[in-house]
Amino acid sequence: MSINVKTSAEIAIMAEGGKRLIEIFKAIKQHIVPGTILKGLDDIANQVAEQQGGRPSFLGYRGYPAAICTSVNHGIVHCIPDNYQLKSGDVISVDCGLFYQGFHTDAAVTWIVGEDVHHYKSLLDNTYRALLAGVNAVHAGVKVGEISSAIATTLQSAQLTIMKQFVGHGVGRDLHEDPVVPNFVGHDKNTVLPSGSVIAIEPIAGLGQEEYETISDHWSTYASDHHPVAHFEMTVVVTPNGPQILTPIDQVI
Image (tube, rainbow, N blue to C red; front, side, top):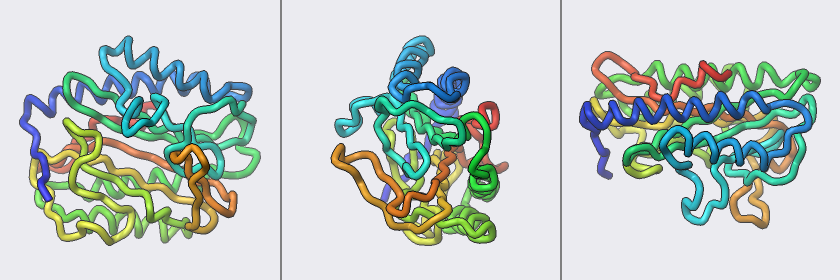
């Protein structure tokens, strides 16, 4: 395993890219309303990425055909935007990355569409709380397992199911770099993160069981029991003084 430590100049570029990525989320959030078609959200992401001087990280990645992932209700991750029309009470996770001046940043937010008629707010709140717990565990010399433990403890205390097949990761010149950052204590748990390493922390949790299925497009994954899933993600720099958040999704929650 080789963790790519970034220079201060590279981190500055990633910080600017992260700000620009949040502008994409701000534009998308305005359209998280009943009646919006998922493909329309993808169009917005493409347009704003271009306006921001970057390009969508996901578009064309291993053949992925869209700028964003739009996972609705029991959708977990990697769901391709289609002609589905959002309904009041839906829960939608939008995952998006931006490639800007040679570096990727990555983020995800889950929103409730319209009124919370199905009472999903606690699912979202506790998954976001798990993200913050993982972020707050970050400091130079931290082990990946310490971050994973903070996330897992928070999700388990809320009696949420950890979707263990889906994990965080390093990020930088490549969209996915070492190390793997699970939402449970597992892979790479003893890997030490030096100052200057950059990771995407992304808890994914549901109200049902862990079993999932991938549909015929070979990307979109869904909880087999049709229970809802939430997903939050931020790109974070490891510093001697703790975490430096590059994609502050608190601006769009």
